[in-house]
Image (cartoon, rainbow, N blue to C red; front, side, top):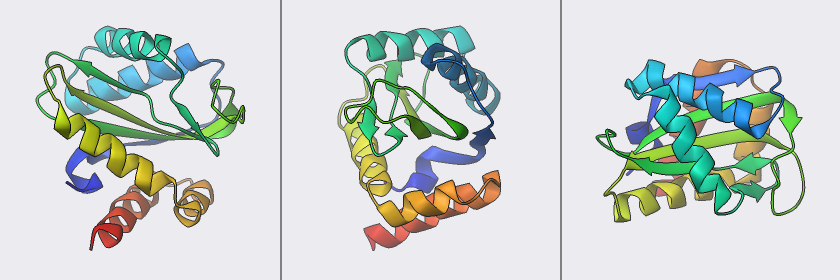
Length: 154
């Protein structure tokens, strides 16, 4: 599995600011509906439910919100770069400006975990995160993510 398999070129966005984690999840839901035809309200509910189990802010300004829900045919990704970092209750208490959301089929077991591990590995790389933070063009961000992950896998 590679990031290009789960992250469509149209599933990358830069947003100026968002007022809360819930508002961010609504933004992700809107993107999921536009990119993958998933119902926005179900996506938001699934992300909120998962977040209720514990924050998905993994540290160093990165959050990996994820959820399983029916109607998803395979693991799908959405990437957002926030120009104004958001408090996300992260493990290191640092605000988040890089968000990679994963949506998986309700019955996805190992594929969901593989995708989460791949995204986590990619965004643990400080050089990749620096490139992501230095660019505001969605096409460039998509290229950084998909090419860096492909070269790591090689």
